[in-house]
Length: 475
Image (cartoon, rainbow, N blue to C red; front, side, top):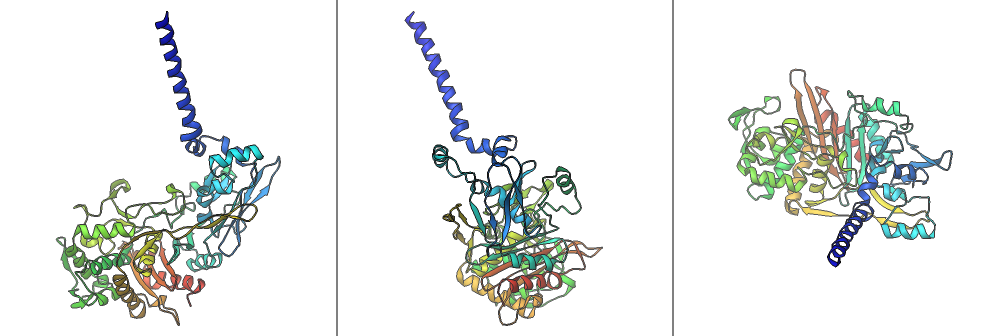
């Protein structure tokens, strides 16, 4: 009898333990995952009764606010319409959330830690969320939209020292107001030709063309094997990886130094430099600049992609793989696809003395009483290149704007450093992907335009960068 009771007692204990384990799993350890599960509609319905916090631009302009609806519910309105739609995103019961509205959902709905939530429930929970002040400069954002002039593309501008995202523009854009109409949302989702919901600044991968030569030059100088005055032959048709490589316009050069090679964007020079540096060196510097991993941005992870070499089905191929043509990778070819955010980070790193910092869209979070509950500071990632290398490369990039392919980005009274890129996408039809990356003062910028017939970085992208730099006070 005692043995049977003991076994029964043991079974009860085991079952009780299983009950505690599973209860703890959903209420403690995986509570956040359960709450964020798209199938779980309860938190979304509960949030309708919360006045979400206001999202503002850097200068205080309202980008998103809550308005009362029937039945003690609240809806979302976006006073600037499409101006910052991709950065701010949307929040609606029927279609969910995107952008900063999604990443900062806990703050905007007033949810903090589990302990605070328990205390709030005892004291009487507040139905008002915290406000979010972003780093976006609404005026410069508007300038970027106008400068793109309806052309498909993207602009990203970062604060050189802090990584604050001053501009994040993606065209075509969309007006988040009224997206709670399922028919309108489905129409945007199925517009494959324009993809208005796609954030081209963080989600679209483009061939970078010659802007990637900045990374190659950084690796060459920082390795100690090259100097700005090192001379390399730039003849057209030089054999790289067993195949002749041409310069833009088939222009041929003799022995030239690296400054001249960057100023004139000589393909054969930078391809040879990369081959001599080797796969491990090039791959290491790409990793340091942030390639092959998603950017550390306060933004939904599934709305960002990693920059790198893409193989079949869009899968990343390690840059040090023998399947990669190193010489052509070095000049922004060879299936290399990058985001504008990544290339803006390259420019930011050079401008910041070689130190890469985390980009961020949020400046601070304040509670309903106006108290700051979170302030986003500067987060250094790593010293990518030495300050000496950064100074040398800055002088080389300044020469590009002063007398090379980037003169259209020049500003009166302030020195601009930059690099153009013209990635040839469809050679027979002269369809190109124009680029410009650069910096002036405290601002780094990246601009790209999609599939421009006959377009070049110097003619099409550089003037956009100039206008954005001017709007951000770099005059």
